[in-house]
Length: 208
Image (cartoon, rainbow, N blue to C red; front, side):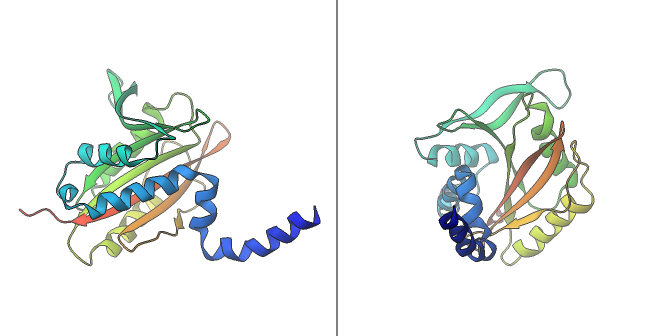
C-alpha cells in the first residue's frame, strides 16, 4: 500500500502536466482514434473528401483489437420515424461499444452541430453508453483553426442545448499536434455521469 501511495504521488505531477497521457490510459480508444486521425490528416487524398469517406478511413485505421463498423443501423432518425444511422460503432475486446458521429464544418453552423450531437446523445443510444465521440472535420484556411476551436468551445459551453444536463464547462485534453483539438463534456444521464469527446481535426479549405 505504501508503494502504491508513493507511485501516485510521483505520477500526479505528470498527469497534471499532460492530461492526455493519463486520459488515454483510462480509455485507450481515444488514443487510437487520434493516431488514426493523424494518419488521415497526413493523406492528401482525404483533404477534400466527404465526411463518410473520412470516417470510414479512420475506422479502417484502428487496430485489429477493435471491431469497427461504419453507417451501422441503430436507434431512430432525428424525426423519430425511421431507423437511424450512426456514423461509426466501435467495440473493444471487452465487448464495450462506443458510438461515433462525424461531420464536415467550414464555419460554426450551430444548427448542424446541435443536430449531430443531439442524435448521438439519445436517438442512436438506447442503452446509455458512458463514452461517445463527436468528430468534426474542420475545412479551414490556414491560421483559422484556433479561432474556430474557441468559437466551437464557446458554443457548446454557453449556448448549446444538450439533451442531458452538462456538468460545468468543457475540458481541454492535450493533443500531440497543433491541427487537432479534443474537448470533453460531462453530462448526467439517469443519475450517472457520461461523457462526450469532441475531436476537432483541421483540413485545408476546399477550393471553390
